Image 1 (cartoon, helix red, strand yellow):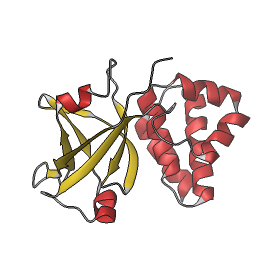
Image 2: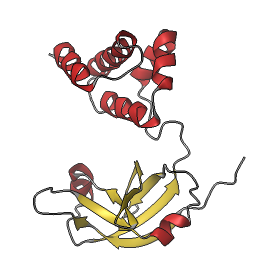
Image 3: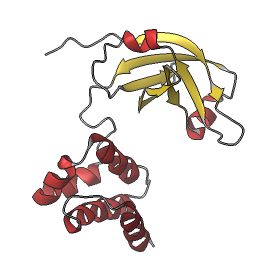
Length: 175
């Protein structure tokens, strides 16, 4: 087993991408990313901002460097805006999925072996999309329904995700 890389700490400036998009990101120099020892294409990290808020994300390639997207919820929580200097700590994300597995999704997968097989046959990115969507709801019943809809969708579509159809199925189940 490879030795875990030590976290890297640095400062960078929160940047707004353009007036139209509203995206805010933290630019990450290649030399900083290199210290984490990534050898594969995926660069999943646990990012801690200002020592106060940690979240799982990816280093996204941008113009010969990398960036981390910082959503409005995180910016509001930390009271940071475009141009603010941010303290960043990055550590390799060694978790299985790159996001937490919601308890409700875990239970659905435990009870449905075919659904579990199909879920784990998906790409890591599609798995994370499902985990994010299930986990974002505060209401337990919504998380359960969402997990059930995802797994039934996979079974109906031979393990494929048909996004438009899935969106309709989620709308129908969530109303």
